[in-house]
Image (cartoon, one colour):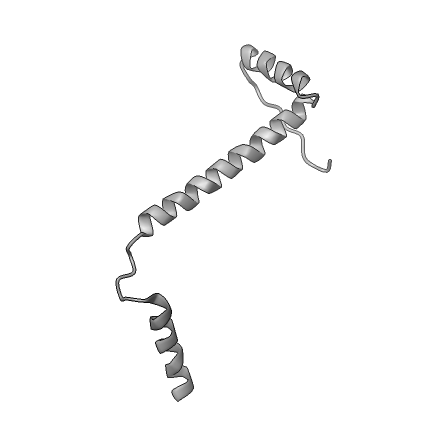
Length: 79
């Protein structure tokens, strides 16, 4: 893997859990950390999308968005 190495400090009980999890899933502790980071990124991105949808819901109040867009584009052809 062409990634970069980092040093982190974790609580002893977290290290024990990570080693146990890694052994049970037949992966290295480094791979378990990589998988955890990927999952955290997915959750963060999913939450960001959900927040965006929730905060922008009902923002458009000019009727059918496609119809509005087609009307704007029709102006381009009239020039």
